[in-house]
Structure formats: C-alpha cells, structure tokens
Image 1 (cartoon, helix red, strand yellow):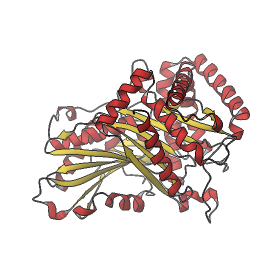
Image 2 (cartoon, helix red, strand yellow):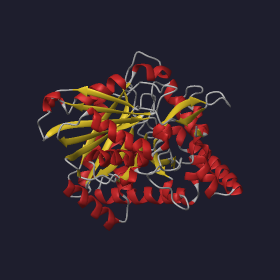
Image 3 (cartoon, rainbow, N blue to C red):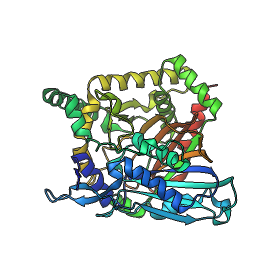
Image 4 (cartoon, rainbow, N blue to C red):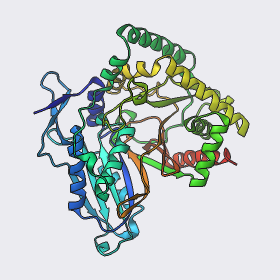
Length: 451
C-alpha cells in the first residue's frame, strides 16, 4: 500500500491535537438552500473527493520508525465518517453551534481518516425544494491549510451538484510537505543564513519590545492555565460586510495602495487597544502567510496539505494606535511594508523551517509570556459559486478548535463578493463579552474606512 510519512510540522500539529483535545482541528459550515439531501448523495460526493485526494482515502498509522510520529496509508476501502444529524428547520442558525460545542474536542483515531462530514437538516423537509441545510466539514490541521481546505469544500459542492465531475476522474499526487517544498526552493546555505538572521532578529525584537507586550486580560477562572484545554471551549464571533460594502472596501484599498489584510489588521489593532491590560506596552501581532504562491513553480491550491508560515511579529506601541481615518490608512501601509520586508528577507521560509520545533515547544514547559496580543490569517477571495446544481450556497462559516490558544485569532475571507471576519479564542479564559466587543468594534472600524 502507498504511504506518506508525516513531516516534523505535521507530526507536531497532530501531537498537539491529540494532547490538547483537538486543538487546531478546523472546519467549515456550508449553509445551503435547496432540496433535501439524502445521506447517499452526500456519501457519493465524499467518494468523489476520495478518488481525487490521496489524503482522503488514507488511514492514520503510527510510524514504526520513530515514536510520536505518524504516516498515512492508502486504503481504497476507507469510508470517511459521515454523521447525519436531524434538526428542526427553525433551529438551523444555532444547531450546528451546539453540535460543535459537544464534539470539538474529539481526537483523531489511529486507523481512521482525518476528516469527517456532518449533514444537518430537518427530516420533515423531504418535499421542500427551498429547505435550509448545513454540511459541516472538519479536518485535522496537519493535512490541510485554509487555502486547500476551501478547495475541498468547493469540490464537495461540485460533486453534490453533479455539475462537472471530470475533475474526479483522476487522482492528484501526494502533496509534498512544507519543509520539502522549502528545501526545493531555497539552497542549504540560504536556509542556514535566513534562519540564523531570523532567530537573531526575533530574539532582539522580543528582548526590546516583546517583553512589554500588552494583552487582553484573562477572565477570573477557577482552573490553572496549563489545563485551559480541559475547561475551555472555542468562542467564535462572525461579521460580514454587504456585497456593496465589500466592493467599496476593495476599491478604497486599491486607491490607498494597501491590501485588504493590511487594513483589517489596522482596524483590528485599533479595536483591541482599549481592551489590553498595559496601555504603555506594545501590541504584538502575528500574520499567517500562504507559502504556495511563494514557491517556484507555485503549488496548486488543490494540493491538500499544510503550507502555512508566518512573518515576524509586528509590534506597535498601544499609545501609537491611530483613531483618524487618514492615520488608519497610514498604519495599514506601515503594516504592509513590514510584511513585504519580512517576505523579502525570507522570514516566511525561516518560520516554515522552524514551525515543527515551534509547535513542539507548545508541548513543553508551560509559558504564556511569549504569546502575542493578536493574530490574523487571510484566505483572500475563495473559489466558491453562488449556485451548485439545485443548491444555493447561502454562506460559509469557518470554525476551529482554539482551546489551547492564548491569542485571539481573526480569519478573513471573501465568498461570492462578501468579505467576512471570524474571530476565535478560548472561553471562559477570555470573557465572551470582551471577545464580542472586539469583533463588533473591528467591524465598526472597518465600515468607517469606506465611508
């Protein structure tokens, strides 16, 4: 049987998930409107995905060559887990939240697949061609990043809608690990010098700026912080612009010469600054970066795998957070320059090389002092359609297990012309009221940028 051995980053991600009750598992809620979906129809669509993607027709195995390491083994008989969960039509906006709350800490199982599907709908809607359904896809982060996972969701809907199924006639190759892709793009000497420079720079920044990091205060809890994954659940708040607001924002960003990620970061920093515990400190912000388009040749988005690194930490004194629209655009440009300089310096490849070790550190001695104030990951404009056969895609909501995170993270994405932000953090470690305030103010400040 064909096998794919996990890289150091993939092993570390899976070990964290297993140790911390599903930490970093993530997924999508695909909100649909159309006729009743039979279990068999979804099963057939999932089978199409399995034919196309080796990761989805493979079982998780322990790697006999080294402890706490894993591999995937192809098995054409593997049936991925599909849960059919009935709910009432009036409960379609809230039901999935209850289900996720109950199941978000489920662990990966040796011998099974690393992705599962839920089908939520009202059994009484058999004859309703305008019914509401939710398909939930949940995946271990070790085999997918946000970019490729969105492609999987899109392809599932293509298969369900029975439109063009030709893409499922042939299988893609195994994706190569991020570390291997970096090795193919950066010489050994360049890897050494880039990593060395990054470590020196990051250490200097932490010693001079990071030691005075301002953070959102933790709520009063009756458990030790090193057991946060035992007692917390993930709290996520969602916000969206309208299509008209989204286009206005894109036009404004183009006129101001900044990216959407840059302006969302600026408004997020503005929203978080009144909430932090140290007004004389520095906001420390981390940014996830997709490496696929940085490779030569670029890696296909459809190649299911984890290809995420980061820039260096962006520091901003709390007292320097602007409040006027003009100054906010200047902050967005400042952040954009920082990101570009980090990319040009090769820091994204350095963090990619180091990611396995950095994630392994999460399993070591407990320490929250190095956690940044906030973080962002931007998926850009995603490949979705408004209609898939007889089903309309009403919307997509990301979800994720953040029970061992000590940093609120914002996910930014655009689906069918609508820009959305989802902000996640563990509760009750962080107060739900504070997290909701952060999300609401982020959306409010973002709308102010397009007035």
